[in-house]
Image (cartoon, rainbow, N blue to C red; front, side, top):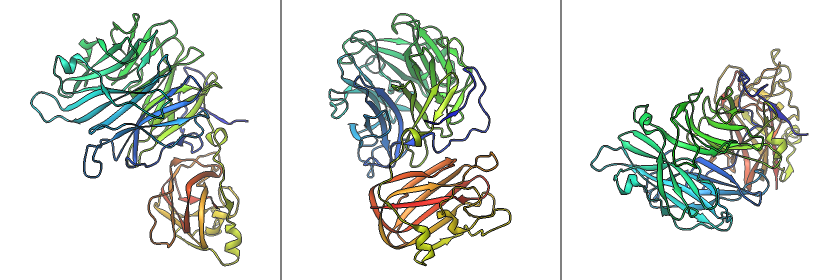
Length: 516
């Protein structure tokens, strides 16, 4: 039976205090690639055949301008899943212009074509009252995302008549009736100040016209102006748009040609995504105290209190409903080495995060290395500053407890000083192995309390050259052994675990190695 971590008692219930981002309720679905080591701004679409397609930004940082290291700047990549998000394809190049290609979004049109959008970005250096330069583009795929057309610019009156420098998008294209598609845009009207609009296409995104602004009067007077809108249809047939900052929302009763005045939501979030579920519940996800979500049972007239999906604050979250009624939420971490993450939850009423180790178990590849037997035979060497041994405060503690097969809280390797990170635990094996899977339990629950830790695992053939970490865990509570794939398997005689952040004493509860 699947495990679900319940967060709310009712749709309008309060956020539970003390929730941490459990390692088993989220999963990174990207790593470094040909673009660099930074992935962000994802979107996800559920296709007619039941498969999923994710688009994301790949670069070296939050902005990746063309340089010697990245000659064409950031690019747009895609991932495909045919098993409801459990596994994902290798990255697929979707678009790569000579500029920094950002904030991609994707939908499937009536004829099965995938339509992806993105914008190019660079700082504005010409005359005029602007700070950014950008343009919006579309690309198409007729084979469910395997191959993509060349980018085509979306013409707008902001660029073509008003000659503004920056036009951007940060919301999914929305198919309406027939070949009618709308796309939320935002433009920099004056330096650092935006206005949000919706542009229309009547031929599946081939041509665009009829731009409808959303409450421009309020936008020009509020903060930096409305931007980054997300649109969906609500249960009574109207369209709703959620916008940054604020957040704010507005409605359209005529398929997006006119919009009501914007009203402020009860939560000061950013970067929203919005979905109407099959149960007619309106779900918004956004950046707030990490990545959060809230529910409306009446098409956005009122909203419940927010609840936390994850502690990471990248957000730019979007979601789809899976065949079993669960919600798959895709978002990103932010910061150096940022990855795209996935979480699954259901609305029952109340909301429960799925245990992804049960829903999407990582298969063990390889044969277990018997660390306990190697140590007993004198063939395994431990080098660590986690030296606590059989202390009265922590019976069962010792460095070799990290491979004793027990996930009991006390039976761990400990560095006995609060928050004394980094803490390092290194093994020298009897010979070189091809490491294919790593099992890790950092610090299990004790006395009903959770203890979050962050850690990295490195492999080396000589104990000197370590390279990049093969496993990274951030702010995670691990109450059982979690498996991490090393694909392809890497040769190693030395294995090093570095605890980089800890609540209380840094601890390593259990380490397992599997080799091919």
